Image 1 (cartoon, helix red, strand yellow):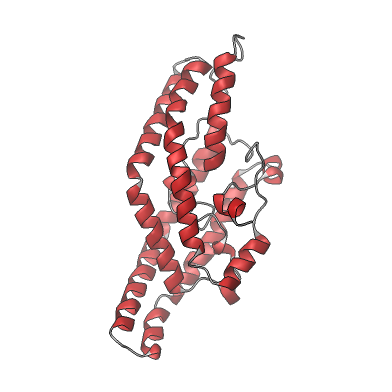
Image 2 (image 1 turned 135 degrees about the horizontal axis):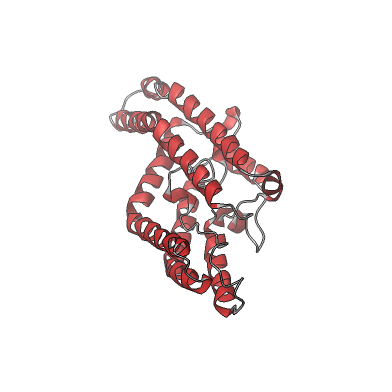
Amino acid sequence: MRLRHLVMALGSVFALGACSNDPVSSSASGIPIDLLPDFAVSNASEVDGGGIGAALLPDSIKLSVEQKAAIEALHDAFTAAHKADFDALKAIEAEAKAARQAGKTRADVMAIMAKAKPILETLHTAFAALQDAIWAIYTPAQQAWIDAHRSRICGPTGAPPLSDAQVQQIRDLRQAFADANKADIDLIKAVRDEAKAAREAGKTNAEIQAILARASAAMDRVHAAEKKLQQDVMNVLTPEQRARWCVVRPHGMRHG
């Protein structure tokens, strides 16, 4: 479930499937069909939505209410701008799964999945820009911590493949996270907007801080939920998958 891996793997697997004349290898039964990037399900991609580690920042440099709200606003805009792309990927994925269930050949299924490649390439570029925008919100101390503690970056083969059942479990976990924490995230954004208006109205720093403090408990709950989500996702994996786990993220490759 990693965007760059999907873009690269789709072309290579399609080529292998199309070239195979062996009756066994031509079967589509073993093809993993997972076209939706993590962030198409919820903003919990890579736990913090940006995929660059802020969810695990220590308390001494954790995100402020204003930073968290600004990042959520970026995600909201990104999701709205690419809704048509996400819907198209869902349709292609459903078509490919239906073809596989109907006993179509590997080449038939891969021809359907190949329709996703230009969409994924567009999303890859857009997601990299989103990550750059998120990175600019972090303080130098936060950036330094993330750079020092980033997860292992995937090589050319990408992250370990997941079964259809694992993919669905992880999607369900991310969606449950989004649903369960929506009220707190909405509160954080509302408090940030109120603080911004107060600042523009010339209110004192003490008054602004009092406004921001109203989101403190919500921030703590979301932070704890993000950590739990990460652990829940890891629990879906087999020991071998956990040992090979890595992340593919444009930020990590461009700023590393």
